[in-house]
Image (cartoon, rainbow, N blue to C red; front, side):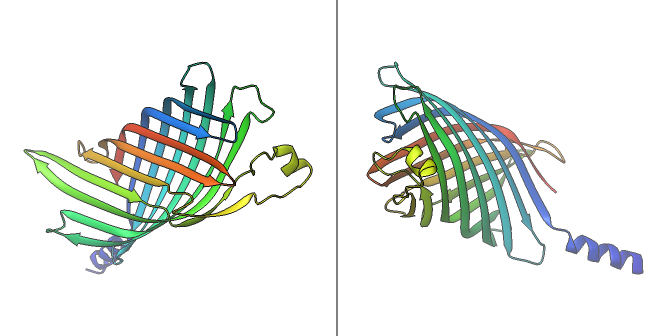
Length: 250
């Protein structure tokens, strides 16, 4: 009896953990007027890892996301190439509701996002490279619905994160990186941002097919729309990715 009681207490204290690994492919659109006023479009690749934890006795859950993106694009005349690479880290805290006999799970909260990246333009310029660095606080919500079709079990999940406030690095109009880092000439290079000056948005839609006891097949769509207008410069990176990968719950 005592052993059974200890076993029940241990089971109740174990956190629920969900993980997923997905790879995405799709179009990218890039603009950075620090490098060139030209618009670029091409194809990109994304790796996305998500991990979520929740204690059985708590309504709060914690989520981590790692997103790495690489794109290759050309201008409208197909004469100039642009390479883009970005890494995004997301940390989120959510309050959870269970509805419809536990089939529907709603989560509301916020995410902290750190982003670092680089753009390299193959152009005749003294400044062919543009660095990216930003921190953002983003209100976020998630909805997950479980359903059965015949004997097959699926989970449909939608996640949305919107901008609120943040900080970003940006050279000023006409300012070189030599002035910033070699001569130490600061010119409003750490810029506070809001949903007006940096109206970014990120959405993730996935469908999990529960094919086995340990692993599920996941397909979905990731849309990450990063944009800002600061220091008299405009920039955006819009990525659309079709995702495929695996997920599991422990």
